[in-house]
Length: 271
Image (cartoon, rainbow, N blue to C red; front, side, top):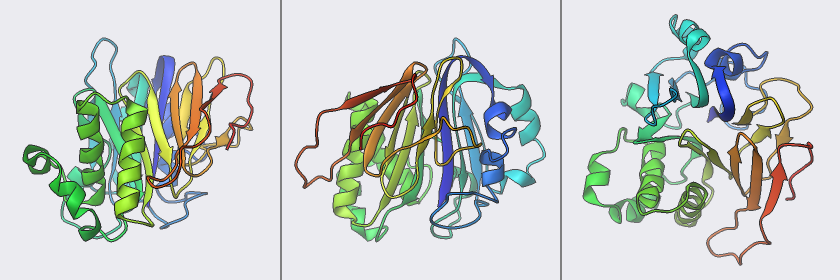
């Protein structure tokens, strides 16, 4: 469907160091992903959002076409540096006319968001969820696709005061209950930390002293420090480390107590 990546670091990192320079970075994943389970080429748009020091509102650069066809992207990524960023390349589930507006990251205030996956039975399956949103939220949708609606549902929870991880978990549970078989790998950052879900597709992270904490659809290199996140897991990350917890379906009993994975040493998070 798509590939996406976000990171949190204690010092600014050039976008290109994590998106373009690695042998299997997001740039290359747009045409040659190694672990993509659905779709083959991510040529239906791309985007990157990042935070400048001292400014909590992120900037975005998005385009409707493939990232490899944009001659400006490599130069932009070479000189722009940020402690936190989110980027994505898109393989559209269904054809549409929204173009750039349908490309992640979606944004509101201090937030950046991406959805890797698809909502089963779109759009009828989630019509009731959409109807429960405030009318202004529906009228403000950037695009007419499933990812934009999933973002509206998550943003509604954030605006109600839910913590980032709780907002993503609640959104995944309600969409999965309404639309069984959906793939809902969500990625969210506010410039300080990253929250993500693994639900139906691949998710990995890389963390350790002296390096950014990276959360991505797939590893961008063969560093042995990469760890795969089990399916149906909620992950939160900062520059200091990663926390994971089981993400049970809406109708299932609560899972075991939350577990914490520090940035060092590299050990598997419990399933």
